[in-house]
Image (cartoon, one colour):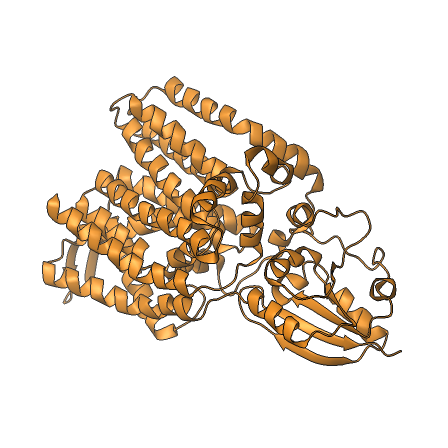
Length: 504
């Protein structure tokens, strides 16, 4: 036990060796973080005017409100909240793996979590994904405790952490599906009648009843506005969805083909080892016999791993963060296979070192290069602005992160149709996920600019298409405003600055 705890501490130190430099080197907030922080600046009651229109449940924003009131609102302090939950997630994953099989399973799962660039990305993002994973792991742990028929207090903790998962992010509902599927497998297929079916159903009713206040509000304010123009219906990626999603749990943002090929073969062997044993092998007879053993623990892990991914495949929503719950099942399945191999210590250590080497370039990318640039956009405009200029944000919701960093003297106008709320945060929350600007409702840009000599237009490349920002850029071209300079910046949104001069 003592040795396992010491190894767990080493794994946590390894995780911190990546996470702390990543946060310290991180730069400006991106749009989603700016929304989180802006909402968190309001108390619980005042924040509801925004949260009732938000796509995500409120717990993250309320936790962040109290966190920032203690530790401040800088980029580092906000992101350290995610680092904390990520480290807690490593600890919780160890105990979940230990519960499923043994300490070695828990340690290897915690190691994969700690070394994953996917988890590094989530932990340097001041959003709700790291807290949701932590709560989801604890929900899964107490779910197994409930099935084991141990202390009644486990029912309370299961309901609590499941509810916290749901209230942190809507994709936490993947647990609702995977856990219920496994319970019915446990109850009807394995014929293990503890806990009683009614007890389980009562627990689910209680959870859904306690979640229903937000869920009903969400349905009333959002379902009437759902249509095919929402951005998440238009996400895409390269390759095959059912392969690319699990791949992202280890290899995110960059591609190093030879490393990935070898590492994926290794991970696939671990995956097979979780439910496969070699019964007999003869090279001379060219015979290989395998024994497949889908233990209850593996069935649970495969449901946890594959349920979100298959649902995502059906919906074709290519947003890897939405499937973070599945990463729990992925790491634990590989760890289960690792434990089944029963490697000698020297081979075990060699395998761990090889995995660290394979995943190191991806982690270094996030530490050294993956930085958002809204502060540089603001500094650049401050350096080139002239008194007769006006700033126009083509995708108006992105005025929110720009305003956070801009300290110049020019008027900033978010280009939006008539009828959109003047409250910038409210409009950003309500309209960030689908386009409201069309050719038919475009305000008169001449009227907005008046007699200004230059227009400085900001347009995020990634979200520009979603918000029809090209309509604004096309207007300047159609009205013969010469483009005298264009500057592109990095980060996820890749904002561009265009400077047009008045032809009159």
